[in-house]
Image (cartoon, rainbow, N blue to C red; front, side, top):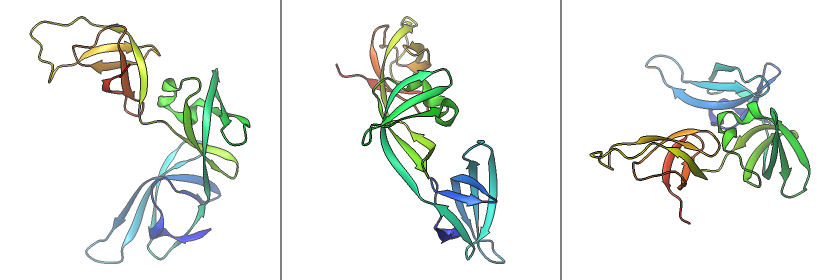
Length: 188
């Protein structure tokens, strides 16, 4: 569907030069002299390469319709992740590269949102938080204050995070999968 360039927002998928691009960043630039234009940072859906494009506000762009599906993560097999559509119960495989670094936080049975364009997956939206157990944590150093100091710890999936000093081995914590930060102690 053709739309004006000034209506494009981050998360939209557009077709340009015969390739599909997902919009990462959008900025309307109004120079002191001349007409306004839109600067878009976008990533190729298939190759993952990033590029920048400029459009005049009156230009039209081919925006592709996306379909967000709630899916359940089943298992990982090497570099492939297998998911099941919660509505149709169809199983499909997505390369781990498409999910990126947050793929290490996927757990069997986890519900996530997969974005599809014309039946092929182009992105995965991870949950805002994941609960995991600490398998290794440095001991508490006396004299540290709880407000400003953090210590390294290793989660059950092998990811290293910084946690407050009162967190010990065996404690379940809530972590943000997007930036790998400690959020809170899990409520049992």
